[in-house]
Each structure stands twice: as C-alpha cells, then as structure tokens.
Length: 299
Image 1 (tube, rainbow, N blue to C red):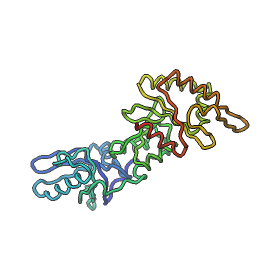
Image 2: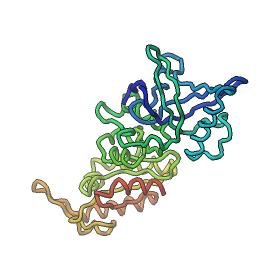
Image 3: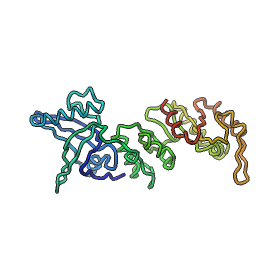
Image 4: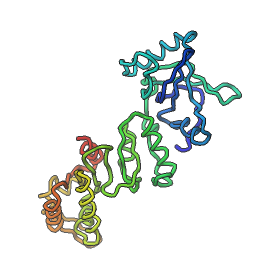
C-alpha cells in the first residue's frame, strides 16, 4: 500500500534504524517494517524533511524501559546487543500510542519481534497500476525490501501477473520489481538469472520462432558478459512427459488445428546450449514452478 497508512494505537513490527545518545537519553529512530503502515516514517520524512518516529529513553528515569528494550532485542535473536547504542539494524515490536489531538506518537512498551506475526497480506505487492519504477506498487515494494529484513527477489517489471507474486507473499519473500535486461528473476549478488516459462509451448514459440531469436541471443550475451548463469525454468504437466531436454523429442502439442513438434525445439535448445554453455534448462511440474525458481536462485 502506498502511500502508507499512518499508525494507530497497536503493536507494530519495526526496524530500528539508528541509535544515538547523549548524557541524558538514547534516541532511537525507527520505522514500521511490514503491513499497511510500512515505511510511514520514511514517507513523512520524504514529504516534510522531519522524521516522525523517534523513541527517547531517559537514562536516569527509564532504566526499566531500557532493560525491557534490551530484553526484547535479546528475545528477537540479537544476543550480542549489550547496549541500545548497538540497536541499529535490528527488528523488535513496539506498542504505539498517538496522543489525543496531537501528531505525536509515543512508545508504550517494547516486545520481541515474534509478538507480531507476519502474514502474506503484510508483504504482498499490488499489481494493479503497474510495476514501473516510481509507481506506487514499486515504492511499496522498495519500502518492504528496505525495512522488513526478509529475503528480496528482484523481478522483472513485466512479471506483475506471475504466480511468483503470491508465492513470495506466502513464503516470506519480498518481490521487488526491476527492469531486467535479461531473464525474469534474480537475487542481489546472486550468480544466476531465471527466465520463467509457463509451459513448453511458450518455450517453443520463443525458441523455435525465428521472430524471437534475436532477443534470446541478446539475453545470452548479456548474462555471459555479466558472468551469470541463465536458467530457463519451464512448467510442465503430466501429459507433457518432459523431465529433461531429451524428452522434448517426444513432445507435441495441438491447438487450433496447429501441431507443434518437439523435435525442432529439441534441436534449437541443444544448439543454444552448445553456443552458450552458461545456459541451462530446468523442467518442473507447474505446481512446483515457483519453488523451483526460488531453489534455483538460492543455490
């Protein structure tokens, strides 16, 4: 959701962004990390130049509050944090309260990050309205990628209707739309790029159709130049009887009185692999396509 909703009274999972101190207090700058309010403080800062979420912990009168905050960090897996000065970059939960009639938001208490479970809807990226850089969906995804602490999958901006959108939400992965000159999915600093093919017929039309040949030659050259593996992951059904490249010889498909023969596709795939050894083809059951894409990139 973009712009983010302003927080109301409740418990929120937050990311602690910076921790400063003086003789009197700690000053922790934070933002909401998931859900409909994700990135609200960042958004307000971009609009006004003022950061609205700063947690002040008095060193003299707030020793119990400080101890509770450290306990929340330790219970969130941050056992090495010995002082709030080391809190930056970690996630906990905070119970927030907006003062009546004012714009000020107070922290009532701190809790472990597990106090607010992340649901698929908390991290699902919208698709209506486009995925281009600067679009609301892209801005929402960018806030989630920066604040959630979850794995991030870079997806080509033309993949907005891919099943990977829902799969990522259901498996705790943030999908971040990007313009990718080759392929559909990659991980930051990953060694592989995946090009998703919904079925073998799509692979046939792309590889055996001469009108598309140039774009796939370009993708091969771009990934080769970048030192990346290019993996085509293709969805299959039981009647395809295709589990590896050699099975394409026996594949055929008829639609609208037109029959597509796998022998020609098989030859084109072999030719492409011989020319570009960094390219491979993986066939997966359609219901396992998304998991296969993630596993391929995560190796």
